[in-house]
View 1: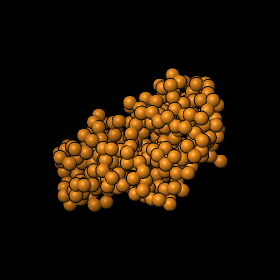
View 2: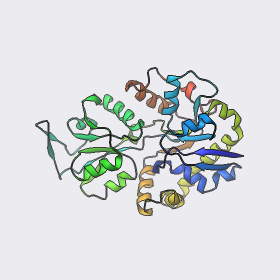
View 3: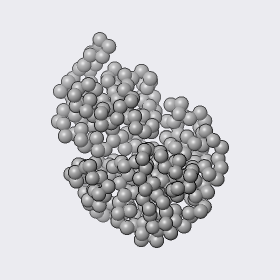
View 4: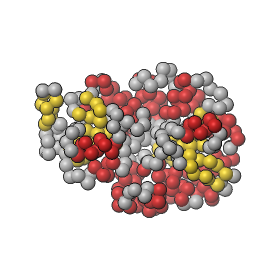
Length: 314
Protein backbone atom coordinates (compact mmCIF):
# COMPACT_ATOMS: atom_id res chain seq x y z
CA UNK A 1 0.00 0.00 0.00
CA UNK A 2 1.30 3.43 -0.91
CA UNK A 3 -0.25 6.60 0.44
CA UNK A 4 0.57 10.07 -0.90
CA UNK A 5 0.72 12.25 2.22
CA UNK A 6 1.18 16.03 2.01
CA UNK A 7 2.44 18.14 4.87
CA UNK A 8 0.56 21.35 5.69
CA UNK A 9 3.73 23.39 6.15
CA UNK A 10 6.99 22.77 7.97
CA UNK A 11 6.23 23.45 11.65
CA UNK A 12 7.92 22.20 14.82
CA UNK A 13 4.66 21.08 16.40
CA UNK A 14 4.19 18.66 13.48
CA UNK A 15 7.17 16.64 14.74
CA UNK A 16 5.09 13.48 15.46
CA UNK A 17 4.34 13.10 11.73
CA UNK A 18 8.00 13.35 10.79
CA UNK A 19 9.08 11.08 13.63
CA UNK A 20 6.58 8.38 12.70
CA UNK A 21 7.95 8.49 9.17
CA UNK A 22 11.64 8.62 10.19
CA UNK A 23 11.31 5.82 12.75
CA UNK A 24 9.80 3.51 10.17
CA UNK A 25 6.53 3.15 12.11
CA UNK A 26 4.46 3.55 8.95
CA UNK A 27 6.52 0.87 7.22
CA UNK A 28 6.10 -1.47 10.20
CA UNK A 29 2.36 -1.29 9.63
CA UNK A 30 2.79 -2.27 5.99
CA UNK A 31 2.13 1.12 4.43
CA UNK A 32 4.55 3.02 2.20
CA UNK A 33 4.33 6.79 2.59
CA UNK A 34 5.25 9.25 -0.15
CA UNK A 35 5.75 12.43 1.88
CA UNK A 36 5.11 15.52 -0.23
CA UNK A 37 5.86 19.17 0.50
CA UNK A 38 3.13 21.78 0.49
CA UNK A 39 3.96 25.24 -0.92
CA UNK A 40 1.76 27.05 1.61
CA UNK A 41 -0.59 26.34 4.54
CA UNK A 42 -3.75 24.66 3.27
CA UNK A 43 -2.44 24.17 -0.27
CA UNK A 44 -3.00 20.42 0.08
CA UNK A 45 -6.76 20.99 0.02
CA UNK A 46 -6.65 21.77 -3.70
CA UNK A 47 -4.42 18.73 -4.29
CA UNK A 48 -6.97 16.50 -2.55
CA UNK A 49 -9.68 17.85 -4.83
CA UNK A 50 -7.53 17.12 -7.90
CA UNK A 51 -6.72 13.62 -6.65
CA UNK A 52 -2.95 14.21 -6.73
CA UNK A 53 -2.64 13.31 -3.04
CA UNK A 54 -4.54 10.89 -0.81
CA UNK A 55 -4.34 12.66 2.53
CA UNK A 56 -2.77 15.66 4.22
CA UNK A 57 -2.41 16.85 7.77
CA UNK A 58 -3.67 20.19 9.00
CA UNK A 59 -6.28 21.95 11.03
CA UNK A 60 -9.87 20.70 11.21
CA UNK A 61 -10.68 24.39 10.76
CA UNK A 62 -10.46 23.80 7.01
CA UNK A 63 -12.97 20.96 7.17
CA UNK A 64 -15.36 23.05 9.27
CA UNK A 65 -15.02 26.01 6.92
CA UNK A 66 -15.78 23.89 3.86
CA UNK A 67 -18.83 22.36 5.52
CA UNK A 68 -20.09 25.84 6.34
CA UNK A 69 -19.81 26.89 2.70
CA UNK A 70 -20.84 23.76 0.80
CA UNK A 71 -23.17 20.81 1.17
CA UNK A 72 -21.53 17.51 2.05
CA UNK A 73 -20.71 15.15 -0.84
CA UNK A 74 -18.43 12.15 -1.28
CA UNK A 75 -15.75 14.61 -2.36
CA UNK A 76 -16.06 16.71 0.80
CA UNK A 77 -13.24 17.01 3.31
CA UNK A 78 -13.28 14.94 6.49
CA UNK A 79 -10.96 14.81 9.52
CA UNK A 80 -9.61 11.71 11.24
CA UNK A 81 -6.84 10.75 13.70
CA UNK A 82 -5.99 13.51 16.18
CA UNK A 83 -2.30 14.41 16.61
CA UNK A 84 -2.06 17.94 18.06
CA UNK A 85 -4.97 18.33 20.49
CA UNK A 86 -3.95 21.65 22.05
CA UNK A 87 -3.05 25.11 20.78
CA UNK A 88 0.74 25.41 20.18
CA UNK A 89 0.94 29.22 20.32
CA UNK A 90 2.33 31.53 23.00
CA UNK A 91 2.38 35.21 23.90
CA UNK A 92 5.80 36.80 24.40
CA UNK A 93 6.53 40.21 25.92
CA UNK A 94 9.39 42.21 27.34
CA UNK A 95 10.30 41.03 30.82
CA UNK A 96 8.83 42.96 33.75
CA UNK A 97 11.36 45.37 35.22
CA UNK A 98 12.91 46.22 31.88
CA UNK A 99 10.04 48.51 30.88
CA UNK A 100 7.23 48.61 33.41
CA UNK A 101 5.17 51.24 31.63
CA UNK A 102 4.70 52.72 28.21
CA UNK A 103 2.55 55.46 26.74
CA UNK A 104 -0.48 54.34 24.73
CA UNK A 105 -2.75 57.04 23.33
CA UNK A 106 -1.41 59.43 25.94
CA UNK A 107 -2.06 57.11 28.87
CA UNK A 108 0.45 55.16 30.94
CA UNK A 109 -0.05 51.42 30.66
CA UNK A 110 1.22 49.28 33.52
CA UNK A 111 2.35 45.89 32.23
CA UNK A 112 2.25 44.47 35.76
CA UNK A 113 4.19 41.55 37.16
CA UNK A 114 1.33 39.09 36.60
CA UNK A 115 -0.01 38.99 33.05
CA UNK A 116 -3.64 38.37 32.13
CA UNK A 117 -5.22 38.52 28.70
CA UNK A 118 -7.11 41.67 29.68
CA UNK A 119 -3.70 43.34 30.00
CA UNK A 120 -3.41 43.30 26.19
CA UNK A 121 -5.77 46.27 26.03
CA UNK A 122 -3.73 49.35 25.21
CA UNK A 123 -0.56 47.45 24.34
CA UNK A 124 1.03 47.18 20.92
CA UNK A 125 0.15 43.61 20.04
CA UNK A 126 0.92 41.54 16.93
CA UNK A 127 -1.11 38.44 16.13
CA UNK A 128 -0.23 35.62 13.75
CA UNK A 129 -0.82 36.33 10.07
CA UNK A 130 0.37 33.09 8.45
CA UNK A 131 -2.63 30.94 9.47
CA UNK A 132 -6.10 31.83 10.84
CA UNK A 133 -6.57 29.38 13.72
CA UNK A 134 -4.38 30.95 16.45
CA UNK A 135 -6.00 34.39 16.26
CA UNK A 136 -9.52 32.91 16.04
CA UNK A 137 -8.84 30.87 19.18
CA UNK A 138 -7.24 33.78 21.04
CA UNK A 139 -10.25 35.93 20.24
CA UNK A 140 -12.44 33.40 22.03
CA UNK A 141 -10.11 33.47 25.03
CA UNK A 142 -10.33 37.26 25.05
CA UNK A 143 -14.12 37.23 24.92
CA UNK A 144 -14.17 34.87 27.89
CA UNK A 145 -11.90 37.35 29.68
CA UNK A 146 -14.50 40.03 28.85
CA UNK A 147 -12.26 41.76 26.34
CA UNK A 148 -13.59 42.77 22.93
CA UNK A 149 -10.88 41.66 20.45
CA UNK A 150 -11.77 44.61 18.22
CA UNK A 151 -10.54 47.02 20.89
CA UNK A 152 -6.94 45.77 20.80
CA UNK A 153 -4.17 47.81 19.24
CA UNK A 154 -3.38 44.89 16.95
CA UNK A 155 -0.93 44.51 14.11
CA UNK A 156 -2.21 41.69 11.91
CA UNK A 157 -0.26 41.64 8.65
CA UNK A 158 3.37 40.82 9.44
CA UNK A 159 5.08 37.47 9.80
CA UNK A 160 6.01 35.96 13.16
CA UNK A 161 9.69 36.42 12.32
CA UNK A 162 9.16 40.12 11.59
CA UNK A 163 7.10 40.53 14.75
CA UNK A 164 9.84 38.97 16.87
CA UNK A 165 12.37 41.36 15.39
CA UNK A 166 10.04 44.28 16.14
CA UNK A 167 9.60 43.08 19.73
CA UNK A 168 13.37 42.90 20.19
CA UNK A 169 13.65 46.47 18.88
CA UNK A 170 10.99 47.65 21.34
CA UNK A 171 8.45 48.48 18.62
CA UNK A 172 5.88 46.02 19.99
CA UNK A 173 4.85 45.03 23.50
CA UNK A 174 3.42 41.52 22.99
CA UNK A 175 3.53 39.06 20.09
CA UNK A 176 1.75 35.78 19.33
CA UNK A 177 4.11 33.06 18.05
CA UNK A 178 4.79 29.34 18.00
CA UNK A 179 8.05 27.45 18.13
CA UNK A 180 10.83 27.99 17.17
CA UNK A 181 10.18 31.70 17.68
CA UNK A 182 9.53 31.15 21.40
CA UNK A 183 12.93 29.56 21.92
CA UNK A 184 14.56 32.19 19.73
CA UNK A 185 12.86 34.94 21.74
CA UNK A 186 14.09 33.55 25.04
CA UNK A 187 17.69 33.97 23.92
CA UNK A 188 17.02 37.63 24.76
CA UNK A 189 17.06 37.99 28.53
CA UNK A 190 14.54 40.83 28.47
CA UNK A 191 11.84 38.71 26.79
CA UNK A 192 9.57 36.18 28.48
CA UNK A 193 6.61 33.89 27.87
CA UNK A 194 3.50 35.28 29.54
CA UNK A 195 0.77 33.04 28.13
CA UNK A 196 0.57 29.50 26.70
CA UNK A 197 -2.59 28.83 24.70
CA UNK A 198 -2.26 25.11 25.48
CA UNK A 199 -3.40 25.91 29.03
CA UNK A 200 -6.87 26.48 27.59
CA UNK A 201 -7.25 22.72 27.28
CA UNK A 202 -8.33 20.69 24.31
CA UNK A 203 -8.64 22.53 21.01
CA UNK A 204 -8.76 20.40 17.85
CA UNK A 205 -5.62 21.61 16.13
CA UNK A 206 -4.11 19.01 13.82
CA UNK A 207 -5.55 15.85 12.28
CA UNK A 208 -5.29 13.95 9.06
CA UNK A 209 -7.63 15.29 6.37
CA UNK A 210 -8.95 13.40 3.37
CA UNK A 211 -12.31 13.13 1.61
CA UNK A 212 -15.19 10.77 2.30
CA UNK A 213 -14.46 9.03 -0.99
CA UNK A 214 -10.78 8.84 -0.10
CA UNK A 215 -11.60 7.28 3.27
CA UNK A 216 -13.33 4.40 1.46
CA UNK A 217 -10.72 3.99 -1.27
CA UNK A 218 -7.76 4.05 1.12
CA UNK A 219 -9.37 2.36 4.11
CA UNK A 220 -6.60 -0.20 4.69
CA UNK A 221 -3.81 2.34 4.19
CA UNK A 222 -5.38 4.90 6.51
CA UNK A 223 -5.96 2.26 9.19
CA UNK A 224 -2.26 1.39 8.98
CA UNK A 225 -1.35 5.09 9.28
CA UNK A 226 -3.50 5.47 12.39
CA UNK A 227 -1.89 2.40 13.96
CA UNK A 228 1.54 3.89 13.26
CA UNK A 229 0.69 7.32 14.70
CA UNK A 230 -0.67 5.69 17.85
CA UNK A 231 2.78 4.20 18.46
CA UNK A 232 4.35 7.65 18.72
CA UNK A 233 3.26 8.55 22.26
CA UNK A 234 4.58 5.33 23.84
CA UNK A 235 7.82 5.87 21.93
CA UNK A 236 8.07 9.47 23.18
CA UNK A 237 7.32 8.43 26.76
CA UNK A 238 10.23 6.00 26.60
CA UNK A 239 12.77 8.13 24.71
CA UNK A 240 11.89 11.75 25.54
CA UNK A 241 11.98 15.01 23.57
CA UNK A 242 15.78 15.16 23.25
CA UNK A 243 15.79 11.90 21.30
CA UNK A 244 12.77 13.12 19.31
CA UNK A 245 14.80 16.17 18.29
CA UNK A 246 17.62 13.93 17.08
CA UNK A 247 15.21 11.76 15.07
CA UNK A 248 13.52 14.66 13.26
CA UNK A 249 16.51 16.99 12.97
CA UNK A 250 16.86 16.43 9.22
CA UNK A 251 13.41 17.94 8.70
CA UNK A 252 14.49 21.15 10.44
CA UNK A 253 17.86 21.92 8.89
CA UNK A 254 17.47 25.62 9.71
CA UNK A 255 17.45 24.91 13.46
CA UNK A 256 20.30 23.83 15.71
CA UNK A 257 19.79 20.61 17.62
CA UNK A 258 19.86 22.59 20.86
CA UNK A 259 17.08 24.93 19.75
CA UNK A 260 14.98 22.09 18.34
CA UNK A 261 15.34 20.19 21.62
CA UNK A 262 14.16 23.24 23.55
CA UNK A 263 11.14 23.59 21.25
CA UNK A 264 10.10 19.96 21.52
CA UNK A 265 10.69 19.86 25.27
CA UNK A 266 8.32 22.81 25.69
CA UNK A 267 5.63 21.16 23.56
CA UNK A 268 6.07 17.82 25.31
CA UNK A 269 5.64 19.51 28.69
CA UNK A 270 2.45 21.17 27.41
CA UNK A 271 1.06 17.71 26.53
CA UNK A 272 0.32 18.99 23.07
CA UNK A 273 0.13 15.63 21.31
CA UNK A 274 -2.50 12.93 21.81
CA UNK A 275 -1.74 10.92 18.62
CA UNK A 276 -4.88 8.81 18.74
CA UNK A 277 -7.63 7.61 16.44
CA UNK A 278 -10.45 9.60 18.04
CA UNK A 279 -10.83 13.36 17.72
CA UNK A 280 -11.79 15.09 20.95
CA UNK A 281 -15.40 16.28 20.97
CA UNK A 282 -14.44 18.94 23.51
CA UNK A 283 -11.57 20.13 21.34
CA UNK A 284 -13.74 20.19 18.22
CA UNK A 285 -16.44 22.17 20.02
CA UNK A 286 -13.89 24.70 21.23
CA UNK A 287 -12.49 25.26 17.76
CA UNK A 288 -15.94 25.46 16.17
CA UNK A 289 -17.16 27.97 18.75
CA UNK A 290 -14.09 30.15 18.18
CA UNK A 291 -14.78 30.16 14.45
CA UNK A 292 -18.49 30.91 14.84
CA UNK A 293 -18.18 33.66 17.43
CA UNK A 294 -15.45 35.34 15.38
CA UNK A 295 -17.66 35.36 12.27
CA UNK A 296 -15.37 32.99 10.38
CA UNK A 297 -18.30 30.62 9.80
CA UNK A 298 -22.01 31.41 9.68
CA UNK A 299 -23.54 28.23 11.13
CA UNK A 300 -22.68 26.07 14.16
CA UNK A 301 -20.51 23.14 13.09
CA UNK A 302 -21.58 19.57 13.85
CA UNK A 303 -18.92 17.08 14.92
CA UNK A 304 -20.59 14.26 12.95
CA UNK A 305 -20.55 16.33 9.74
CA UNK A 306 -16.81 16.98 9.86
CA UNK A 307 -15.25 13.95 11.54
CA UNK A 308 -14.99 10.46 10.02
CA UNK A 309 -17.20 7.91 11.80
CA UNK A 310 -14.12 5.83 12.59
CA UNK A 311 -12.69 8.82 14.51
CA UNK A 312 -15.74 9.55 16.70
CA UNK A 313 -14.94 9.91 20.38
CA UNK A 314 -17.27 7.77 22.47
